[in-house]
Amino acid sequence: MARLRAAGAVILGKTNVPVMLDDWQAFNPVYGTTNNPWDLGRSPGGSSGGSAAALAMGFVPLEMGTDIGGSLRVPAHFCGVLSHAPSLGLVPVRGHVPPGVPALPRESDLMVAGPMARSAEDLSLLLDVVAGPDVPHSAAYRLDLPAPRFASLAEARVLVVARHPLVPTGREVEAAVEAFAERLARCGARIGRDASLLPDLATGARTYMRLLSSSFGAELSPEFTAWVRGEVEGLAPWDDGLRANRLRGMLLSHADWIRADRVRVGFRQRWRDLFRGWDVVVCPAFSTPAFPHDHGPEPRMLDVDGAARPVGEQLAWAAVSTLPGLPSTAFPVGMSEGGLPIGVQAIGPFLEDRTTIAFAGLVGREFGGFVAPPGAGSRSAP
Image (cartoon, rainbow, N blue to C red; front, top):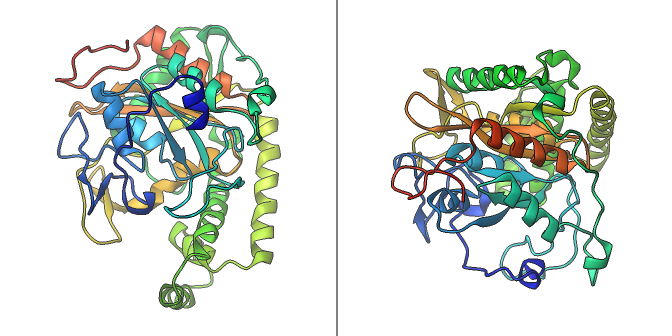
């Protein structure tokens, strides 16, 4: 916030989030429920659900949020706006702590802070303001990020992945991703669809779940830790599902964390190799459009084409870029049959944030970008 104020930003206030930022919804017992502006009976996403809804309605031109499990990307997808989860460490996360805790410099091995907006140009503007090392007078030390890899969609090499080996993609989201790929191809972009070129998504999701849960495990109460331990003891030795990895991650030893981190390092190298032949990877941010409000007890379920699936498994889509710490820009590409926005995330090479943001900008100019919900005034980005 200090960098935003120094750049002349006017801070209007804070928008709604879920309890502990731990939901793809935005409701809590203090401020109530934030609705999706496209359908008031549905979630705007989370944790930055209030931010996405405010942007979509035109209340503010810019927002900031954090992302460790899709908290920027899912709200953008649900509400039809844009967001950017930067390369790991590009934007300081000082101050992202519970109330009453000192805002000291800190590093994160998964979480990033980044902008939300209604256009790629505004994403780039805000990222330029907040990026840079967490040091005094850091304006003098801003990173000189590489220029975008291409100046037109015809120059772009895009690997499109619509399916995940562990998580089913809803019919409407998959159709939107494939239609987007076809439009890119008609613009001259080189399109690939061979998911085997990617580092193994299943292994990546499992590793991410262990590392993610280990960061929460240190904060568990003794009673909850005992419950988790009982759940883990009840798991079959061969159970390598996402829920099993999430439970085991809460009890991860330091030695096991090091082993998981080594897997992550290997993934980073394989992603570097991938980006020698491709510029961006496009995939869903979530398997369905915005889902109806669900304030019931955990575990919550998600309707994917009539099948009930654990909503927590959607973390697998966030893991694709979060595990290796790569930049990911989310932007709208279509609408569902019921009139809900559908977005994708474009993942790029480490520190090549300008490439994924530029890609979103080119897409917006070629196919049309942000569209305001009914009743929000102007139906195009300012």
